[in-house]
Length: 166
Image (tube, rainbow, N blue to C red):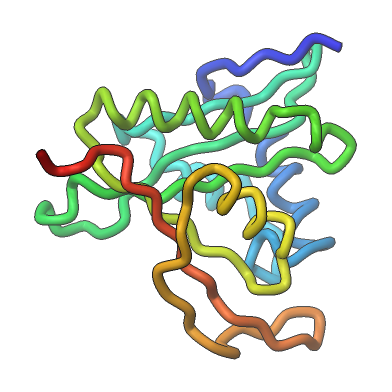
């Protein structure tokens, strides 16, 4: 199996929207409970941003994507970013998540980002485990603030410092 991680292209938006919508409809990995349009996904990806955005391809099919996005609009938070990534279930557990995470981290270090945040549903135990295994630590939890598919969940925040102060 040949997997490639490539730069995001605007022509990828249909497939990315499909992946996002799969996770919206079938999991706690994506918080929304209504499917997205391509326009909305374009806004989320913040196309004009200099932060990294990638797709994961299996042959020519996009099977996943990942991107960094601003934590906060105030410039005092420019050294921190948030990550999000989604890989279709039949392509997980093949090391793609780690490869994508490493690529995003490397790019962010070059952009002088010092800290990465993710927030995860407490019902998405696989993602929490993945992030712990890859150096993230839980740094906050908003208890029972979300409800999807009739189930309450916590919003778990995790952080990885990628540049320590000297």
